[in-house]
Length: 196
Image 1 (cartoon, rainbow, N blue to C red):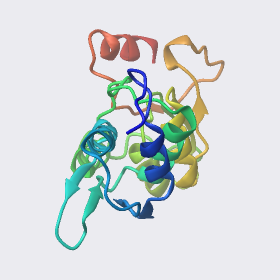
Image 2: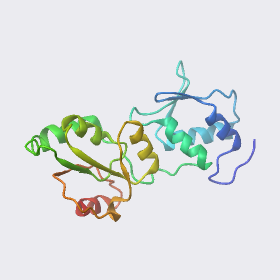
Image 3: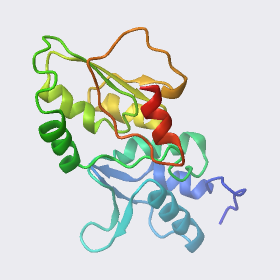
Image 4: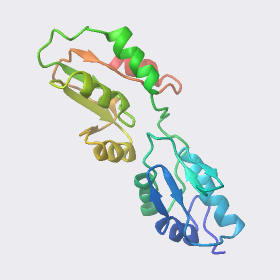
């Protein structure tokens, strides 16, 4: 085993992740037997980005559908460091919540606007943005996201987000609607609401 400094990925781990097979939300290691420390570091990386080990036929790490593990893992490999633990308090918005917001809370609040301008200030992985694009195809949707990895995942889905800290932005334009699932860490939620 090649020892790594605290927070650094072992060279063997980097090699194993580079050679892994990525199939949708499944990541399978193809490197053969790893030492206990190396496998534990890979398991920790996967768990930090919401993956879990599954044996049987899949025999790999499975991630929620909204996560694109290859994009995230390639970013981690490029940095050679353990990923931070949910540094921006990301909790992807479940489809059931999106449906409730769009169909029961917003309903037809802006249906009368021909080309609505919509702001999503904490876009995360883009779940709200995709639903809004489907419901309001003529809308201009401004999606703001601070995390560069989440931005990459949204771009893979065809979304063109603005990478920025929403709390440090000053928009010149007015929006017809603001839709968000803000971070709920500490006072971040209140700050997002007040700034929007």
